Length: 185
Image (cartoon, rainbow, N blue to C red; front, side):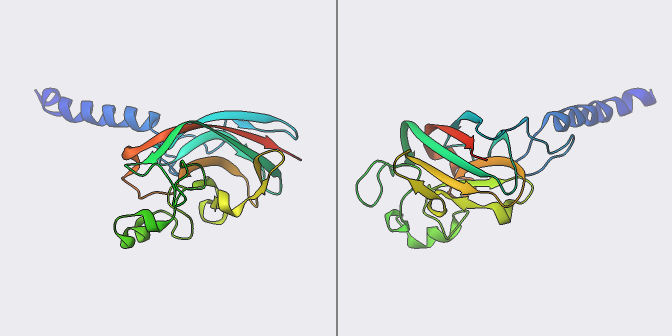
């Protein structure tokens, strides 16, 4: 009789434990370690598919502090933030995003994840030092010849990608890209 009274509670707790064991929340690692699946060697490249609707895309690629990387972006489908599909120059949205002028209410600019970067700008960070490593593509040097961005990381950790938007509003984002990352040294 006592067993029957506690069975629903025990089942609920076991289900919750099972769910948490398989859960991976952005920036929060409940169980297991924080090691990415792969760390690139010098000259090695890896491609990942990125969707603008992902508020924190963990690439499983580890970056090594002090190393230089090249980031190449190939837009696979048109990018759009809700109804905004062009930047202030009437060009299709890309990794550089768009200015706050295009938002219907200027105060909305204060709600994006980084106020110092454009709306919808591609952002990168590392899991172990998210504040120190946060960069937008506008912070990276662009090489016209290779049509890629170059950057040096100041700490080690998994590469995470997202577009600069308001948390909770990534569901109205559209678009995908192939991101190629190469470790240069």
